[in-house]
Image 1 (tube, protein in one colour):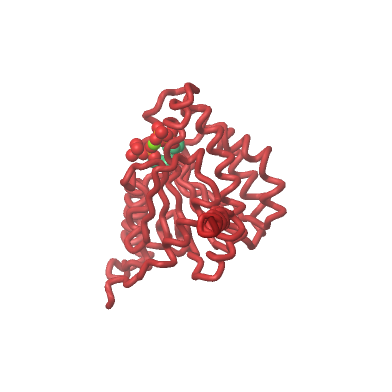
Image 2 (cartoon, rainbow, N blue to C red):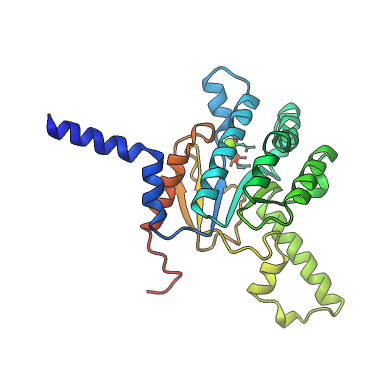
Length: 258
Ligand code: IPE
Ligand code: IPE
Ligand code: MG
């Protein structure tokens, strides 16, 4: 009986967010966490709801995980929100996704400002609808001088697209004589990517059971730790997030050395 109670108590404690938070706080905190937020559509389908209901629910997870990242003192949280391939989805789903930044602005800007969060975007802005771009601009302007967590949305982001764009601009600068061909090294490449100035992700999380990268940060993930879960994004809670960080803390990162 006592053993049972002990185990129950330990279990309850372990499942408790605050306890896990204080445990994780004692270990090394990754500077940059990137998340491939996946499984919104399947979450909705399982409940007999339209796919967009999953995206709506996923917004609540964005809020919860942003708060958790902020509490942990993570420097950068990158959220893969829309890929360059996601345009292949039905028009109404794409339209819905493109309206989410505007909605998130209304519901969350005040809190993000209060939390000293700086909102940024990586990806090809030029092909986004005006209302989406305007929401992003408003976020950026309102949080520009904030010095806390960088909340980085990857929107119309594709890694191959990003690399090609960088290569084209490097060629331009070499051809115009602004830069010498032999000066092109990894540091230069980093400066031409959307992620210029940001450290590479230390940890990448993908929800919903798919074990792939789906054109996400192919250059930047060279030495990132990867963490996959079957939990869908709408069901992903702060405890899952802390669990991922806890796992990360037990990894031995060697970067090719011994
Ligand atoms: C992730 O969920 C959100 C985006 C890619 C925009 P999905 O919409 O991909 O959900 P599934 O993978 O179809 O379940
Ligand atoms: C990756 O998810 C893109 C985002 C999370 C925004 P997808 O659902 O588009 O990826 P695939 O199609 O399963 O590879
Ligand atoms: Mg998906």
